[in-house]
Amino acid sequence: MRQILAFGDSNTWGLIPGTSPYERYPWGVRWTSLLQEKLADARIIEEGLCGRTTVFEDELRPGRKGINTLPVLLESHYPVDFAIIMLGTNDCKRYYNVSARTIGKGIERCLDVLEQHLSPENILLISPMALGDEVFLEEKDPEFSRESVSVSKNLKEVYRSIAKRRGINFLAASDIVKASTIDDEHMDAAGHRAFADAVYAAIRTGLAAVS
Image (cartoon, rainbow, N blue to C red; front, side, top):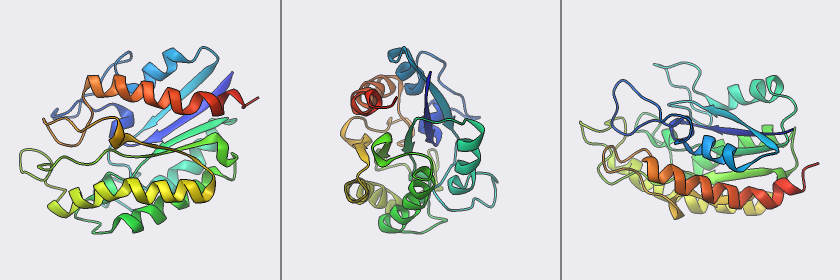
C-alpha cells in the first residue's frame, strides 16, 4: 500500500478553533482523515504538530523546527511514496520577525530534504491560508501581529513561484478556505471538508503515477 506523508502544523493536526487547552477534531472531521477515506489504496501518515515552523526554533516549545523533524519522519515511515507539506503560518509570528520571502527560503530547505527521497512530481506544496485580520487580539493569539497577517497573505505567491521553479505540485489553501472567525487562525469543520476535497483533487493524478 502506498504511503502519503502529510507534514504540517496545527491545521494538519486538526486543532479546533478557540479551544484552550487545545482540542483536536476527531477522525472523520479533520482533513487528513477525510482524505484517507477517499483513498482506498493509500495510507495517510498524519504528521501535524501545533506550533511547527519551517526552520525556526521555538525556545518555549522544543521540537517545533520542521527541518529537524522531517528527516527522522521520512526514515521512520519508510517508504514514503508521496508527500504533502503545508507550513509557514507559525513562521509569521512576531517573535521570528521575518518576511514571506525568508519563510519561502525555509520551506525550500524542507523541500530539499523531501527531494532526497521523492521526485518533485510526488510532492505537493501547499501555501497555508492567510491569518484573519484580528488574529493578534489578546483573546485570540497575540503571538501574531498586524504585520504577521500581511506576511501570511504574501506566502501564496512566494510558494507558487518556488513550486513552479522546482517542478513541484502546488495548492493555495487560501483559495479554498478561510480561518475561522473564532480565532482567525484555524480551519473549522466545514473548512476541513472543503480542504480535503481540494487536496484529493490535487494529488490524485500524481498519485496514480506512483507505482
